Length: 185
Image (cartoon, rainbow, N blue to C red; front, top):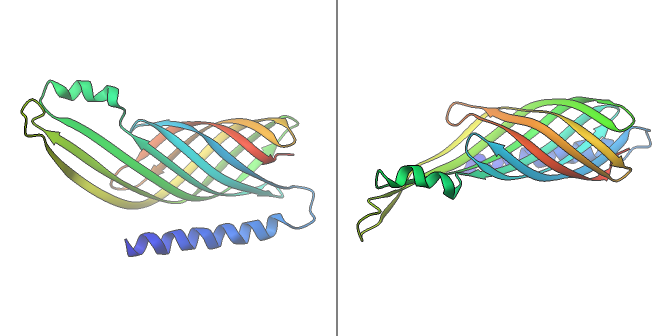
């Protein structure tokens, strides 16, 4: 847990530096909030991010939370046990963007941390439900995000992106559908 706080503080410092650059008087200084839904190899979830754009350079901090949906539990009920997985991903990314009038194409890479747990409920057919955490994990890895933003107005946009985190414990790959709010052009 000590390393988690060090990592979060490092990400906050990185983002603070990028915000300082975004406040200069250059033409290409943009910043927006990214809120959306993600679907990855764990299951559906939510995504939130903050991004600054300084002269076509992107700096962003992202958070995603996913869990195994209740529908998938039906597959394990016949075995007499239920498995649920919850995963959080924090990432700090740098990348480049190609801007057109109403479309932004971008690619980013950086460092990320994945935390999660797998919970197993054994013997659900008996009255003595045994609930145990099968495993907890925290892993650092390479995070990436590439996508397409549709800029609808100066302060509003829609986006679709692919993202992931390559690490040793729980590699994640998925897709994000998001709403962008902020200075988009």
